[in-house]
Image 1 (cartoon, rainbow, N blue to C red):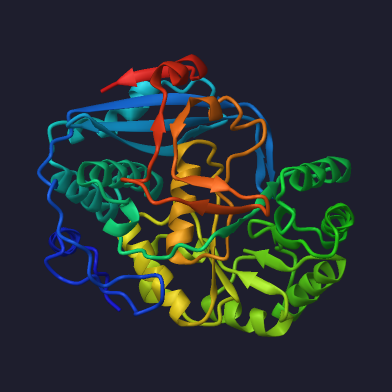
Image 2 (cartoon, rainbow, N blue to C red; image 1 turned 180 degrees about the vertical axis):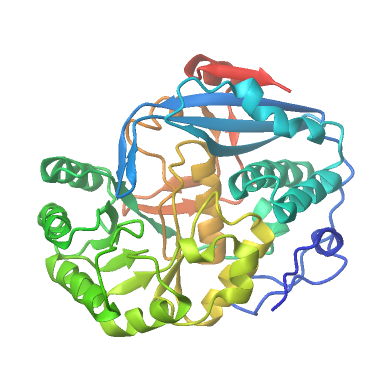
Length: 409
C-alpha cells in the first residue's frame, strides 16, 4: 500500500473532503466530520522544561537524567498541549535554543501547521518525535476549538478501558523486587514491563524476582531493546526466549535485530510466548508498506517514533484486521503525553498502554493538572471521558513553579 500521507491528501482527509483509508476494524470510523477551525491562526507557543533526575537502565546504556519539554500552542483563547524528551543526559540544554524549530509555526493557520509537519516529516528535517510533539498539540488545540474530542478528528471510536503497563527499569534484583511491589501497591498488578539486558542467565533472575513479587496472574512483558546479540541461528535465540519464558516471561519486545522473515519465524518457534515488534515499525507511514501478519502476536506502536497520527491510525487498523494485539509504548513520558497516549490506546483498542504517569517522575507534574480526560480505575485499567481535544488543561502558575525553564516563542 502506498503512503497516503502527502500534504494535499492529508488536508483533504483532515477536512473530511475524502474518506480516511482504513480497514473496517471495530474502533475505527471512515466518516470524520468536516473541520471548521482549520483557518484559525497559531498566535503563541510556550515551552516548559521539566527535569527528571531518576536513572533509567537499558541494555544500551543508562539515562542518568532527561529534560522533558511540554509545548502549549495557543489560538483564540484555547491551548493545545504536547510532550517529548528534549534531551537525554543533557542537563545544560537551553530550551530557547532547542525550540527554534517551532518559530515558523507562528502566524500559520492550523491547516498550514499540519502541512508544515507533514513536509518536515517526509523531508526528514524534523525527527519523528518533533513531528508528533507538534501534531499532539495541534490535535488538542483543534479539538478544543471545534469542541470535539481529538479522537473524533482521528476517526477513533474505541471506548474500552485499557490495561496500564507498569515499567521497571532496574538491573539489580533487589531494586526490581521493590519496583514490582510498587506496581502492586499502585494497582498495576495485571501488566508489568521489565527491562532486560541481553544475558539469559541474569535476565532470568530478574524475571523470577519480579514473578515472585507479582504472582502468577501478572502478564510480564520483557524488553531487551534488541539486546540479544550472541546467537548464530534463530533456534539459538528461540532457546534463550523459551528459557526466559520458563522464568515467568509472557511477552518479549524487540529481542534482537531481526529481518521481517525472522520476526515471523521466531513467533512460530516460541509460541505461546508473545513476540512484540517495535523498532521495525518506525515510522508508521513506512511500516504501512512493510509490516506483515505474524511478525508477533502483539505490535508496539511507540510514542515519539510514529511520525504522524493519521498513518499510525491506519497502521493500527491494519494490525487489528490481522487479529493481532496492539501495545502502546512509553517514550518515558511523565506529563500531558501520558493522558494523550492513553486516549489513543483506548481509541485504537490497544490491549495495554505503557505511557502512564510514573511514581516519583510525575509527582511534581500531577498538582499542575487542572483537568484531564483519563483516569485509572481500581483494577489498574485506564479509562476516559471524552472531552474537547485531548482534554488536557494545566494550571500555568503551578506549572511554572515546578519547571526549570519557561520560554515563549
